[in-house]
Amino acid sequence: MKSFSALRAAALLAAALLGGAAPYSNAFAAELAAARPRCTAEQGQTYIDQGRYDQAVREFTCLIESDPTGIEGYRGRIEAEVLLGRYSDALADHARMTAKVLPVHPDAAAVILDGYAARLASAPDSLPALMGAGFTQWAEYDYPKTIQVINHLLEVQPNSVFGNLFRGSSRLLKGLNRDKGVADIERALALAPKSADVRFIISDAYTYGLPDPVRAFAEASLALNWGLDTPRVHAILATSYFAFGDEQAAATHLLRHFELVTTELVPAPPLPPDASLTLPLVPGRAYEIPVSVVAGETLSIATSSRDYWDTTAVLLAPDGTPVTGSDDKNAYFAAFDWVAPATGTYRLRVTFFESVNYGDLLVTRD
Image (cartoon, rainbow, N blue to C red):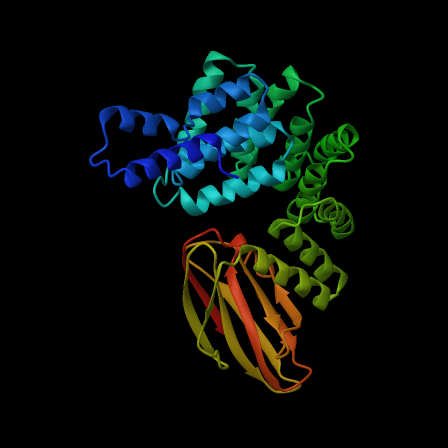
């Protein structure tokens, strides 16, 4: 639904056109400008400082819409989402920032962290700044610095769900003090047992940090059932199913991952044995590659890239049924060896994980 100010602006413009006013009078131009929706990072931050986090999300969303490649809109909305406990939304916004802001501002993360450093220098105990800085470091994979920030956060607020959860996650993902990391996670879970976002972060830690596919599956299943139908949750469930030996169930979740991240599905040339394809990726793009196999043949696929370190793949049968795939088989690159049960032309979909990065993807068939 349009806001009153937007409707007012449209009405003023229509009246001017119908009345043949050309050019606009100064008074009309001023009124039209005043009727346009306005949003600023300063106002969004004021809402955060007042504890009005939902209003802050709306303000920063408006800012993103008016400046889609700007840093502050995403920085502020992520901070507000973290304060609301919406960690999955914050991580999704970090991915959007990677796709939309980094091509214009490649130093965006440094700019954001410098801003937090300045805020903390003047207000060392600021919970919004501590949580914003901690989340940014975590999302940038700098787990030791995340722990440093959160150690102070927990001195200020020992029962912080965010602090306990993300310090525990960072400890497991970095392999530091794993027993303490598990204790942190269990503390966060005790503080917020009904949070889908808490369950999601726990499943992530037990997938990519301290591997425990049974625990990861249980936590990710709760997150999904409680509303987090996200690419990362489906990737975690796929990893668990691969560990259980259920390739088709894993492939089903990988296909859902592709459905959620793909805005452009591009057909690629067929990939015969002993050949490779180099595919240029942009955010939202996935490729579908025909691969012909005969019954009993082993289809061996490997992916790599010099531009990004994480790929994913899913293989569809001729009738479209997902049959196998891969996420983190060769380090974080997708690769698989699969024996075809029937002769036919299968379709291989490939992209970067969550499809938010630019670069070339190499797909090789042995």
